[in-house]
Amino acid sequence: MTRSKVILCGIFLAAFSAAILLRPFRSPAGAATLRFPVRKGLPAREVARDLYESGLVRHPWNFLVWVKLYGHRSVIKPGVYELSAQESGFTIFQKLRQGPPLVRITFPEGWTARQMAALLEARGVTLSADFLALADKEKREGFLFPDTYFFEQGLPAERVIERLAERFKEKEPKDFKERAMAMKLSYGQLVTLASIVEREARVPQERPVIAGVFFNRLRKHWYLESCATVEFALGDWKPHLTYKDLAVSSPYNTYRHPGLPPGPICNPGAAALEAAAHPAQTDMMFFVADGSGTHRFSRYYKEHLDAQRK
Image (cartoon, rainbow, N blue to C red; front, side):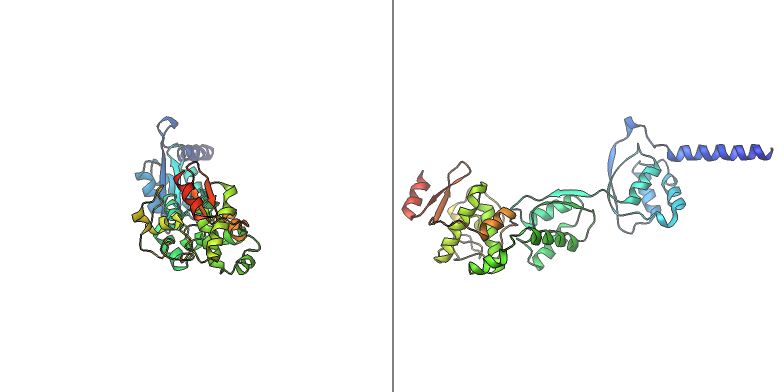
């Protein structure tokens, strides 16, 4: 065989091999999308085996050949990926080399650390137990700002909590500390008040008024009698509380213990923080839900009883 024919054969074999390596394992009609987890520190050979056993590549070498070709630039990033056998081994390799897409998570205002932890684990960001243990140890309940975030998967709980706490600092009212001093409350107590306002208010315009009612009761050394604090003590948000619920033994039960509870009962948003720091100037001392999503406010107890009956 002449030299030119050898070269042509080599080119043909190379092109044929490349075509096989770049070809998807399955046709689009038979390719389902799978969630494919990659643990931190997992060797490329084991990743290739898992891809093969999951039916994502024709052979482990459809993936490993690219690891060999890219050498030190082929570091595989841990996380959870959405992969399909419709993709070639090279496309899958590129995805694993670039890392999983960022996860978009929105925490609603008024969520607890426990609710946040469950969502974070469900979306593959961090372990619920790690998040809760650190949040409890550092007393972060109330200071984890509810907002929309974009997280990498497999993050340490420390980094996630740090992100949420930093956002809290960015979003709290600029004069929050000064307002706490003016109201004769500690910084933490004002956050606690904001968390109660967050859970009690149903419409935005009522937040400052509800904050004003609670602040009036604090100044007069009355029991706050907040149903939201009882729900926190019970460990469950309930649409209606019974008299048995109101008697629960807990420092968070503001029907049995005067003043503010030991700490926040949820993570308040910016509007609740603003309302707590700048409560409405009102002489109202009571409020009761009217069944339509708003409240009836009263100055005197007799008026409050009438509102309850109505």
